[in-house]
Amino acid sequence: AIVLGNTASLAKTGYVFAAWNSQASGMGVTYSAGATFTMAAANAILYPIWIQAELDFTVVGAQITIIGYNALISGSMIIPGGVTTIEGNAFMYSGLEGVTIPASVASIGASAFSHSFSLASVTLNGLVAPALPATSSAFASCHAGLAINVPTASLAAYQAAIGWVDYASIIVGY
Image 1 (spheres, rainbow, N blue to C red):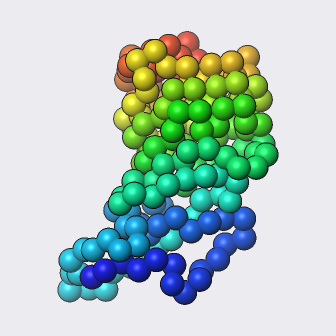
Image 2: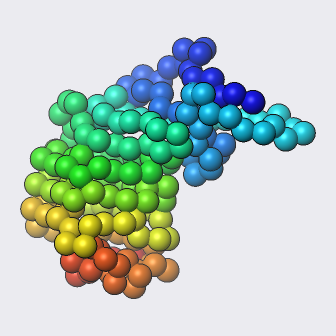
Image 3: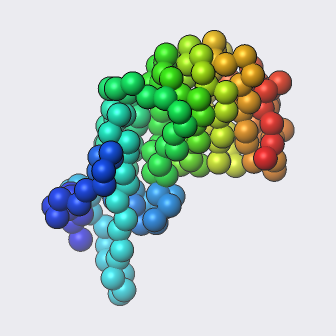
């Protein structure tokens, strides 16, 4: 089967359609327009991945990358399941106070959230720490009380992971 884009012009106020996913959570297989897959005997159900309109992103195959923001952002944000990468500098100098990052994110670039002076809480849902550059500045110059929340079962692994070791003292389990 060939996956179509958002041909029915589905809409969600404040969001932009990015791609389709085999699970409503965005944690299944991501399909961009034009992708193909083999149909099983049962019908396939695909769910839209919606990304906040304030974010700039790219979709290449099954990879969704947040590359930046195009309008003032503040408060808390939940990055949707299905996003695989947060590019370096993507949220630099943002007004975010909190961000939740799904398990689908496999890498976070250098300085991704740096100088986001209000950023006090980062929650990662992945059991495996996303890749960070070896000398990461991903969370440099954020709120003085920044806490990076990770699943308790993965606390030690995050604290010892390349790039994350720089933030070991502020990584806590939930």
